[in-house]
Length: 379
Ligand SMILES: Cc1cc2nc3c(=O)[nH]c(=O)nc-3n(C[C@H](O)[C@H](O)[C@H](O)COP(=O)(O)OP(=O)(O)OC[C@H]3O[C@@H](n4cnc5c(N)ncnc54)[C@H](O)[C@@H]3O)c2cc1C
Image (tube, rainbow, N blue to C red; front, side, top):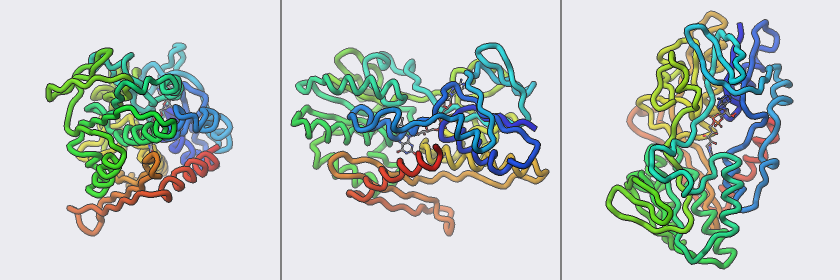
């Protein structure tokens, strides 16, 4: 049997390593396909614009890591998937057949959803964006207002808060003091992280003098203003906005694959609800009835679950591993260290949630330690 994993990010790499490790002595073949040669620890892209990390500090080549686990690596761009034929087609027109496929190709900014978003606002989504933003920040005109925010349709608001606080700290350190405003479509500041998280964020906004607007949708951007659904227009000199999400381009070209704006619906086994031998993990999937926050940690957990379910099925057993949404994260808070957030469904009661959040220097140190550990472990 051949198991093909598409994507070399948190989801794809962890799926491949788990399968490779458990199938070393078998006749099955595990192949990972990615269009880029390296893995990037994307949470640390946050620090690139402030000169605290270089891309080479936070990335490594996929091939040697996969080779150690007995996984074959192919660097190619997927142009479509044909589930009826169990076939993946590449941009160079070559093809590869699979018995099981795991789609882990992440999500992409859907700039077209908001007029003027592309070109007028900055990003730290990919390495090249973070490097461009670094240049923009270095030449920032601190007389002009700054707006940071997250647009409706983006399930990763987390990183917009981190960028906000890191930018504020960077500018204060340089003794520049422009007005900074934050906005989010969320009902309250990161309200899906729980009440404590919202309260901690409010305190930090107040202490740092950052104005914020919640429950607003961004409608349009032009060269000078952001226009919101409540009729308010805010002028800006620099802005960084997390755009709405969509799936990878090849999903739109895969006529036999149902999707919602390029994202594929899965069940709790992380199996496509349409094709039983396709699993989808990480930012690329849609999990109905779960309040999913898209993170690298979720992608990793989901990769392990998909791998375990495939292993069970290869042994002729029923799949048993299910994904349940939870949140465990470390958020940077600029001058005041970081915040640790824990939010898990309470297994003793179906209606309640266990949650905890704390801020201070310790979570900041934990975040740095985690980055170093993760890169060391996988490199
Ligand atoms: C600035 C920033 C800060 C973040 N902070 C955190 C954090 O603190 N904690 C946290 O848990 N998460 C954080 N995240 C989110 C996290 O990085 C993502 O949720 C995670 O990367 C999703 O993993 P994934 O494997 O689903 O997709 P991705 O990491 O996007 O990987 C997708 C892979 O698919 C490949 N690919 C795409 N299209 C094709 C194609 N057509 N053919 C072949 N290959 C293809 C790509 O090259 C890549 O290898 C942050 C993200 C950013 C950008």
